[in-house]
Image 1 (cartoon, rainbow, N blue to C red):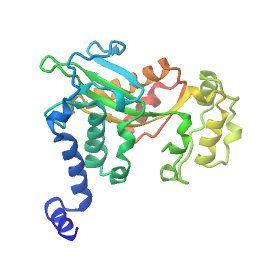
Image 2: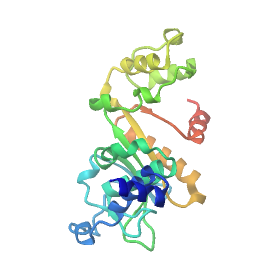
Image 3: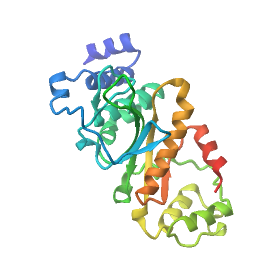
Length: 260
């Protein structure tokens, strides 16, 4: 183990970078006989919705049981949907943003309900994934990152816009909300109050790990399509309120510009 550690530091700079590359290597270099054992190139989802003519989006109830294959920009050959999403998560969140904490929680990205945005191109028989996001229901709220202490800060100043609270109350079945009931409360208390004000918990969810792939020149366009597709897909599935963690300032500005 000492020898492995020394080699990892010499080649990659640290063990965490080595572990990241190793996890990507395992996904990309699975034996092709195993990779294509159940492959059916004609398998398509006829229920997917189309956005902007050539982009498809859908909610997959459990990606671990989906038998379709998808291209990603991080592998020369297509991968099963579950592997493709894990690979994209590693490449974008861990390798690019250095969120090494996710190395211990990769299994979360390999199963369960996910939103996916993808497109078919003239050169490939398999679609290419553009975006994905993990959708978690209230049945496993104890696993939601939204309420995790890691994503809390006592210095945050909540935006208690009266019009926003009113539109939130009208959008779904919630107890009446008033700005006065949130004054002088911490962000944690406000978030929990909002959650427990929801009368029908089946109409809410958490959406996290939103990834954007593809050409860098189209990054903002793909981000716009992903947010639009995700909002439409969740609304169509009966979700009225979505709890999420936004890291990109551009996404915050996008939602602020939409106002109500």
